[in-house]
Image (cartoon, rainbow, N blue to C red; front, side):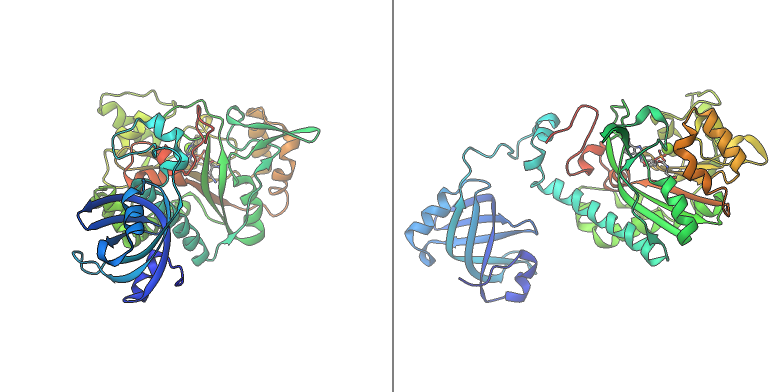
Amino acid sequence: MPKRIFFDQLRDHLDEQVTIKGWLYAKRSSGKLIFLQIRDGVGIVQCVVFKPEVTAEIFSLADSCAQESSLSVTGLVREHQRHKGEYEIGVLDLTVLHRPVHDYPISPKEHGVDFLMDNRHLWLRSLRQHAILKIRAEISKAIRDYFDNHGFTLIDAPILTPNACEGTSTLFETDYHDKKAYLTQSGQLYMEAAAAAFGKVYCFGPTFRAEKSKTRRHLAEFWMVEPEVSFIDLEQDIDLAEDFIVAIVSRVLEKRKSELEFLERDLSYLERVQKPFPRIRYGQAIQILEQAGQPTEYGQDLGGDDETIVSNHFDRPVVVTHYPIEQKAFYFKRDSADESLALNMDILAPEGYGEIVGGGQREDDLARLSRSIDQHHLPEDAFAWYLDLRRYGSFPHAGFGLGLERTVCWICGLKHVRETSPFPRMLTRLTP
Ligand code: 4AD
Ligand code: MG
């Protein structure tokens, strides 16, 4: 049997005999010809069974083959007869490795979302999911490349933690020998320690929120990239986030255009994602909401609908800064010009995709930070090590977190974040 190859190697084997292995995606026949569309995970290739070129047994095997049967095919690689620049395989031999025990449950007809989510393990094989997860993989790689190429050191944060970073109401709790532990909400506190050791650092991994939110933007488990940089302020933090987001979007446009087109994404929206991003203060966001006839009381957090209205005012991501300090996590530094405001920033994606980045400058004064931990009713002993960072060479520093799934959702132009995760975990879903 000739060497088994994947479909991205076909061009190196023109006019040669090869073996390919995969699954039957679709089939049509006309008289002496059967066209098998075979999927090998890398791509889909047409395999042509021509009656005079195979045994009667193989012809009838091809004819009776059901969707998602696993197959091994040996044949001749040639140029596709209709599509220039593509390849097809003239079948010489065919083995059915496994026949589905029932009809494949996912057909081209419309299925409900719950059905598809219940069958997520099979749904991953469809072209749409393939395009989305290819884009997700590209974004993950672009994230790592950006920070690796800008002198950052990757420092992995722990997943099991003794304390909260983003508020105690959204913690997943678990037993940890004779103690309690929590699944991390954010690696930030550890990145602050790492920034003092390595200057520019980032972590990129799964984070968890036990939010009771059932929205198109919320997952219980999501991936977050969190850079943290020593001796920078809020403005420089925003500069970094802006440059980073532009780099990610342009990489996807460069490398995954065909997947974006398959998803029917309007590329003009993505092409507009250029520097500089508009920067407004929370107070201005409140004014925009008032003018739009959707008043939100000053001091309230911006909800999902509020974010949509604010972001629709702009043609690219918008940075919203200086929220009232009470709304924000305990670690933010106060604005010295107005102590009621936090030196924080959220970045809202355009087209109503909501917040994709949250971050800002950290409190670096020991007494103030300690007071804030008290005011948030957090256990001071659990934060003793964190306070040490303000005891030994305290330093101004800032960073942010970008949520991977929300970013994929926006870049792909999807309605709901659930399709951006291979196996999403949500308020009402832990399976498959
Ligand atoms: O704004 P958040 O909560 O910020 C932090 O966790 C900071 N400690 C980050 C830092 O400064 N190092 O979350 C950051 C981002 C959000 O903007 C959003 O993109 C994403 O994480 N995110 C979620 N994504 C999906 N589902 C959820 N439940 C999310 N919660 C936050
Ligand atoms: Mg936030």
